Length: 134
Image (cartoon, rainbow, N blue to C red; front, side, top):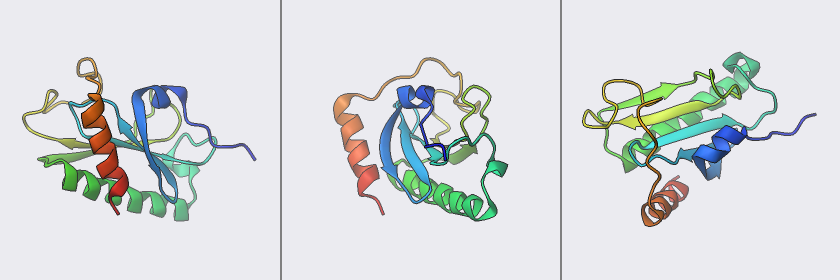
């Protein structure tokens, strides 16, 4: 059996938050948007349908958990959920808290200018809050 390995592009753009039952939870290192990425820790996944039905249901529960977590930490007008995979083929799900006043509204966050990395103190504070949440 092949071991789970995080795609290097995801690793380069994100910060580790936690490993939940199914997914590795990552914070996109772009302070303009509160943005989590869930990557099921299974090797070779490209599509949602590569997960069995039980794992798909587990992922849906984890997406719901990520949405609640973001909503509690980052007031937002809308939560966006996406699983495109056109650039990074490894199956992953984006959960993004959006504000009507954010840098990309109402368009997508993908390709909306250069990422603005978190400042160290803000990053560490947010990671601590994300990791402490139930």
